[in-house]
Every structure is written in C-alpha cells, then in structure tokens.
Image 1 (tube, rainbow, N blue to C red):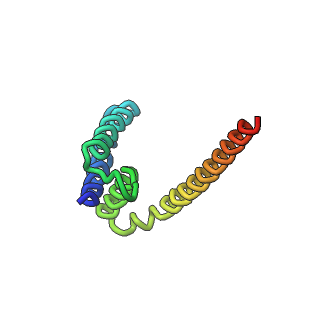
Image 2 (image 1 turned 180 degrees about the vertical axis):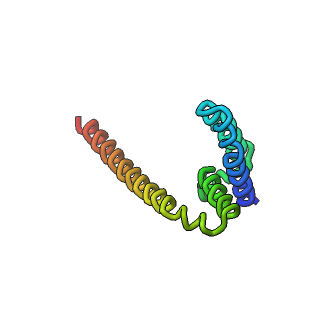
Image 3 (image 1 turned 60 degrees about the vertical axis):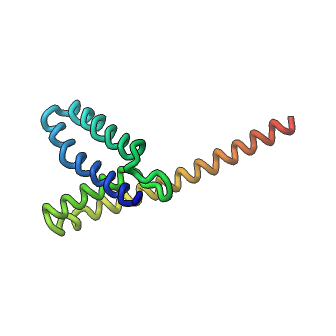
Length: 126
C-alpha cells in the first residue's frame, strides 16, 4: 500500500507542477514562478513526507522523479511518440549528470572520512 502512496503522491505533485507552474509564470513572471514553487512544492513536500502519502522507508526516491516522469509522459500523451524521441538527448545528459554527481559525492564522502580518521589519529597521538 505504501508503494501506491508513493506513486500517487509523486503523480499528484507532477500534475500540479506541469499544469499550474507555467500559468503562474505566464501571469506573474519570475515572481509567479517563485510563488508557484513555494506553494506547489512546499505543499506537496509536506503532504508526501509528513502526512504520509509518500514512502519514507525502503527505496528512497524523492518527488523530482515523479515530477519528471509526469512531464515526460504528458508530452508523450499530448504530442505522441515523437516527443519521447526528441527528449532523449536531454534525458541522456540528465542521467550523465546524475552519475557524475553521484561519483563526486562518493569521492567527497571518502575524502571526508579519511580526513576525519587522520584528525582523530593525530589527536590520539598528541
């Protein structure tokens, strides 16, 4: 049941982002975009993480994946399969960025662990 909650929570967030955010930006410019981000993402984050719609244990996937899938599939349903093919270069670059970010985060974590171990060792010998 919690997996269904995860799917519903992220799908609702994606629908709001894809349908409302652009209208706020068109009507009010960059201020409307900031307001939409605060209201939509803030409300959906609260619902998904604190009210209990979202799966908080097990495999951790945040709302961004659901929002991205909702946007991708919206264009596929509205424009057809050509929209999926046209978005492949962007998806590939996003995936590569995620891999590079993950590797960089792992290296930073290793570096910080090594640095902390060296500091502990130097304080013990002093």
